[in-house]
Image 1 (cartoon, rainbow, N blue to C red):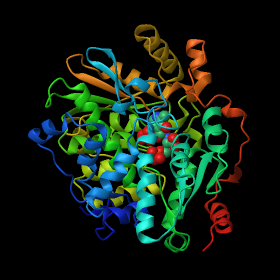
Image 2 (cartoon, protein in one colour; image 1 turned 135 degrees about the vertical axis):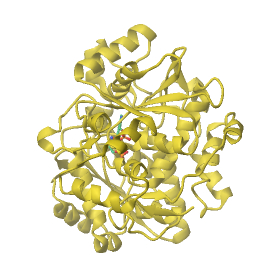
Image 3 (tube, protein in one colour; image 1 turned 30 degrees about the vertical axis):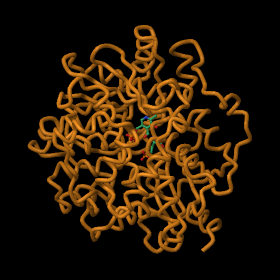
Image 4 (cartoon, rainbow, N blue to C red; image 1 turned 180 degrees about the horizontal axis):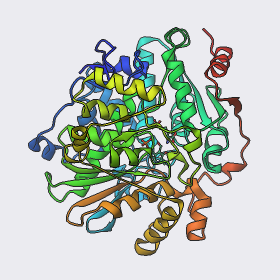
Length: 477
Ligand SMILES: Cc1ncc(COP(=O)(O)O)c(C=O)c1O
Ligand SMILES: N[C@@H](CCOP(=O)(O)O)C(=O)O
């Protein structure tokens, strides 16, 4: 399996190279030359596997430069009940991503039982182990520069803290995360973790990360790596839980299943798209956004017009306060027939701050061939959804998953099983949960008093040069 860039400017590379490389050298995103395929008989054979064996069956199809026994050991060490037991279903933690049944055809897939209570742990824990393995093999080091709107940051820091050869520099939007998210990151005192609180939205942090990665000389000199979903390693690990969710929800292998995905940077649902391209019988992929509805607009009109700060809003599903979705590039690459010249032209207009509109025939593909639907939520919708799910089913869902619930209601067809992806636990968003239900959500043991711990971070302007200067001062070359 070799990887190319969506923009066509990268010689085919092996998995370990793109893992360490992050963003492709031409500014594009790495993607496999072809997607591995599973036919019905092969899917039937996967259906009964536990999470670890399933993860190996899927991921090994994308990774051929790590010996199979080593890859299996890394996967086995990652997906254990001990790592994924933090949330609501300790009894079910062997399943890693169990389903909650709401009714006969509506389920929530738990993805947030890892150490930081968000779906990011599903991929980030594996990424930490993969980085450590590949760096050890090569005798190299990496300085990860990442951007977070609240959950990637803590997941990355918990996965990489204390790891040999890895430093993490995490840019987060100043004052825009929940108190719990902030405390989770800023209370870490490990010497290899650096929190940079940037005066701007997530999009500004992500633009800076990309600018740093696009400076080839700086990237090489300071050994810069990525843990955001621009890194293919994140996406491939996320593909696995669509297979798991499908096998847990479908009555018979081959039946259609719809997935609803709270979306921001489009990494999670992009993994769903890839699972579908590999032959998993997903019928619809339903994008759920909050008031930052650039993706909803794209899937409803075919126009992709990322927005500036004046049209990006602070909402009560803050991790989705994103107006420029990195991984849409991977999906549009497939949509335009993997024509990298066409893709590069579209993204030149995105990078200029303009955007693009799909042709009529391309727009039709979104729905007909690729099965996408979408829906946006407001704060009032979110509160109503949290209340409804609690009153009707006795289940507490977080505000992001609530955006998914509204989208599920808008698009579900009760003859087809629908799975809503749970993207975080309610404990991370106490204020909104209290507003909706009048009670504080349960907190996993060990996290009481988190917000009272001493916090360590540096506040910086949203300026790539200022961030580079910060990195130069702290990275020994
Ligand atoms: C809780 C939560 N929900 C949803 C999202 C959106 O996921 P994605 O960026 O993969 O679309 C994020 C962050 O990305 C998140 O942290
Ligand atoms: N919502 C994310 C934003 C970054 O997404 P990623 O999947 O590209 O890392 C966050 O919580 O930080």
